[in-house]
Image (cartoon, rainbow, N blue to C red; front, side):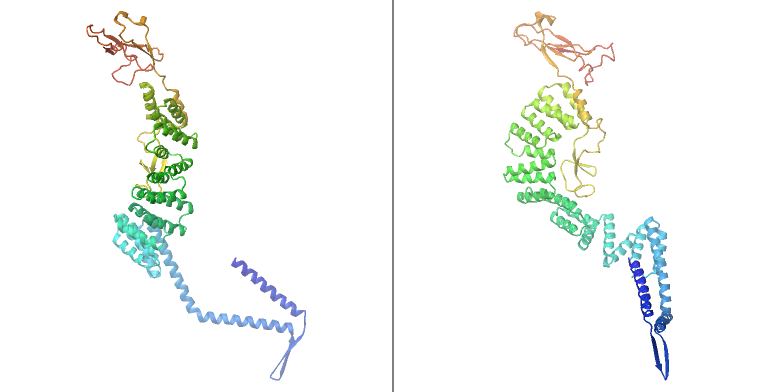
Length: 545
């Protein structure tokens, strides 16, 4: 831009000079000068041209005299600039060598730079010396150089950074905390200082100081508005958890402030509901949980909502679960909440239908365990129970609070591994010892439901099916026939229940039966052998008296 302006000014000057000469040429005239008895006469245009030539000659002469007069200083300045350029070149080479880990070259370039540049005028020389000392393992010398830089206002931030790193390396956490807080106090825009100070204050439980530092970062434009609001909501939630037992009112206010900043923050809603519960304000507690349920359905929210009033019966909890499902229909956690509540209320058909719908939506360990509980409570069929338990073993694990590979049963404001704030997210753990056989897709739930064995039917045997009808009296219970699914190797099993012992009659006749496999295959009991493997071995027999 400046070059363009200069060019335009040059052309404007030339144009003005040309226009001036043209104006003078269009108005001819004579001009004369009398000096010491002589008269000099010439044309006007010649006189103007001579005047311009004289002015240019004077300017050229002045420039020449000035150049000669200032030539010694110019020569000194030229050689000084050349020397400084060589020094900066050596300094640049030394910093590159220090970054590459070449301590020998870094030290040599540092000595050369000191000979070409004054160390008090260029603080980068101390930085190069400190880096070379760290590479060579001379940590005491490096700490002294960092301390000198911390005392200089121009290099204070760099010196504090070096001292903080060294204190962290040596495990001096208290000294590292002081260096970080000093740097954050003088320059809150430094990310490393703010992060380290936030971490130390969060570990110590100084939530108010952490919030104040976060506000300073936001004012300094280190964090954008969305990120700052999210982190502040996390800090307020952690503060509310600490206040919940001793100061429920303060916990409620902090949790509500957190919900205003992050409407989908589940832990904040749970803390606010618990605070309202301690104040016997169940209506507001339910409203808070319902609002966050609309934003983010979560099993902890459902559990807190169903258990909000301690005197509720199982039927009352089922009604609340129905309300949650109405707020968020066709949701995995909504279906699970209704299924668990229906199981507690004894409505097995409804519990089974909701649990199967949840299994079709997402194949998870929890839904299969729930189906096994329903099967045990409703039918008691061990074959179907084992089927659901086997599906639970193959299914992926349920979601949990996970941060940096660490799985926690409850939400925490920061990661215990890295100290990162707002690190925990609700997701499926990936650090399983053995990967799941299934991938957890809805098709896996369909396959599991399709492979479910039928319920074993119980019927009363006819009298003509008994081999010895005379052994049964009117007081003897009828034998039970268990109908198994059809299979080439499967036979119906007849089990005679124990007859009541009469006071004078002799002991009842012993009945001997053969245990056949479940669903056409041998059961998991190692004591029962597969007849397909060995036809010569005698079958295991069970005597019932």
